[in-house]
Each structure stands twice: as C-alpha cells, then as structure tokens.
Amino acid sequence: MSRIVFFCIPAHGHTNPTLGVVRELALRGHQVRYYSYDAFREKIEQAGAEFVSCDKYDITQQMSRPESGPGAAQRKPGTALQAPDSQDAARIGKDLAFSTKLLVDTTLALDDMVCRDMALFRPDCIVADSMAVWGKAVALKLGIPFVSSTTTFAFNQYSAKIMKQSFREMTNMLLSMPKINRELKRLRDVGYPIKSILDILQNDNQTNTIVYTSPEFQPCADTFSDRYAFVGPSIRPPSFRIKKEKSRLVYISMGTVNNNLPKFYRNCISALGGTDIQVIMSVGSCLDTRKLGSLPENISIFESVDQIAVLSAADAFLSHCGMNSVSESLYYQVPLIMHPLTSEQKGVAARTAQLGAGLLLKKESPAQIRRAVDYMLSNPSYRKNAAKISDSFKRCGGAKSAADKILKACAV
Image (cartoon, rainbow, N blue to C red; front, top):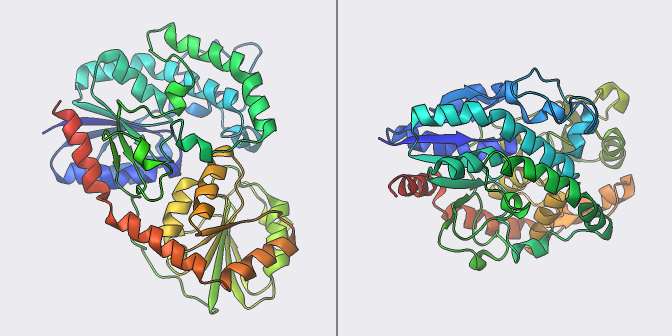
C-alpha cells in the first residue's frame, strides 16, 4: 500500500478533476491524504481520502486587505483570515503580481505544518495542483517524488502561443515583474528552489505531470515529453435529468469567481427573453437577483445548478471558458458561445474556436448575444466538432491512467 498526499487550491475547477483519481487510488487500497479547504471536505472524504483542513492558512488571507501597509507582508502564519470581497476575488487570474503574492503567502503559512506532517506521514508521493505551489515546493525541499496535477492546458514555450496576451496585458505583466521577483525571493529565503515565475506557470519536461485533457485538445501536445499523461477530463455522469421545456436549451454561466456581472446578465435576459429557447442561468451568490428585474417565462435564474445535469440536456453553453466548464461542455457534445475574462480563459476559448467547437462573443450587447446564439443553434458543424473532441476525451485513460502515473512515481 502506498501513502499519497494531494494538495490543491480552493477552487472547484481544480479540485473536481482530482476526485475520480482519489477514488481510484482508494479503491485500489492506497492511503490518500488530501490537504484542502473546508468547503471541499465532504466531496473529498466521499472520494475516499483523509481530509486535512488548510483553512487557517487560506490562499485568500490577503484578499480583503491592501497589498501594502502594516501587517500585509509580515502577518504570522496561521493567523485568522478574512473573507475575500468580490473585487479582490476578481483580481485572481488577472493580476499576476497579486496572485503570486497570495501563492507565496500561502506557501509560507503552510511551511511549518506541512513539513512537520510530511516527516510524520512519510508519503511515497506528493500530487499537487499546478497552482498549489506549496505542494511542489515541499516535495522539492524534502526530496519526495512529485506529480503535477494540471487542470488547465499544459504550458510551455509552444503552447503559450495560444495564450495570446494584449499589449496592455503584456505591459502590466512586465511592470509587475519587480513585485513578482520580490515575492519569489521570499520562497528562496526559506529553502524553496523557485527561480522564476516560470517555475510556477510553466510545465517542464522532467516533471511527472497529469493533464486532464486529451492530446487532441491540448495545444502542441507533441512538444511535451513522455512524463506527461493526457488522461482526459474527469467527468461524472449526471445525477438527474433536466426536463427540457422547449426544443432548445441554452445554459449561461460565468463560473464561480468573476461572476458578479449584473449588466451582462441583464443583456442576456434582454437578448433571449420571450423567445422559443429555454434559458437556464447560474449567476453565483454575490449578485442580488432582484436587480435583474422580472423574468420572462422562458428564463430561469439560480445561484448555482448541477452543471453536469444541465449540460447533459443543453444545446449551447454561453460560458466564461474556464477549463473545467469547457471540458464538461465538450464531453457532453455541447458547443460554446465564449466570453472569456482572463488570459487563461482566452487561451481555452482560442483553442476551442480553433477546433470549430465554439464561437467567440465579440461584444456583450443584447443584439450580439442574440446573433451568436441564433448562429450557433442554426449551424450543426459546431456540435459535430464538439462531438469529435468528446470522442477524444473518452479515448483517454481517465482516472485509471492518472492513478497508474501516480503509483509509478511512488515506485521510483
């Protein structure tokens, strides 16, 4: 029996793909310990892992406070945390310096506890989300075999070309590099071998890596070494069936982070209200839905939905293009109308459009939304291309291949 440790960031899109792998390892009789956050405890324990809470070391510990000022950088590990506000949450994925600070703060806060735990538990392998840099850092620091869990596209100099950044984004990144380098020095000062931001962002060909997509969907898959296992997305079956009230169903969701977008939702209602299309919108808990006004009979709005259940019945998905959402949509052969908000989402959208399974929403006006929906629903090529990608997902080895990869690393 092997002892395996998982680390992840507090995000559904990064946690959910790992749960099938945890379940597979547990069913094979291996001991799995999963370091995560209380909101994910139930699903992690249901997958068969021992759950360890990291809430008091939460990645959001700086999100409701300014980046500078008294106590910002000097806060002691393990101190009480504040809940993030929506403006700070929206900065993640858009502000690299801010995100780097959060990752470094969390790594340093977890350092003593994790190093102590690893010495006692003596894991055969550490599996860490590519953004949970504390997992990779402690594996390097303690000499424990490591596997990277990549829930977005694998990133190298070739695949990066699809993540085209605007001149403004490039300028902002260059201007933020001194801040980023200062944060990374804090890691090096306590023994973490992190040389540059690329050690966090880029996948290297020497690291065992699980990527939750297919080689066909991954940009430039042939440029990655055999250390990479493209296992396909980990998608559960729908827990129930959505009743379609009209012949066509459009699902609208902008994810769980940057989703406080009342103007966008009002535009969707204006565009699709009173049509012969059933619309299901998931808008999150930050938005007061009363501000959206009275709803036409064909539109339903919820704080959250069972996305798998909705996608199993949908004809199109208007999405922010988070990797998890896109993978779930394409798995169920649902083409996408794409409205990405961050660089990562823009890269996923670009690849989806390149393969003919999605259509970029150029403007979020009611007229443009209506035009995009009508065009997609009247062009079957989008669904056919989505089906091709779905087939590529299903040809991958899934959770079993991911488990095999991890156990091979344990045996080294």
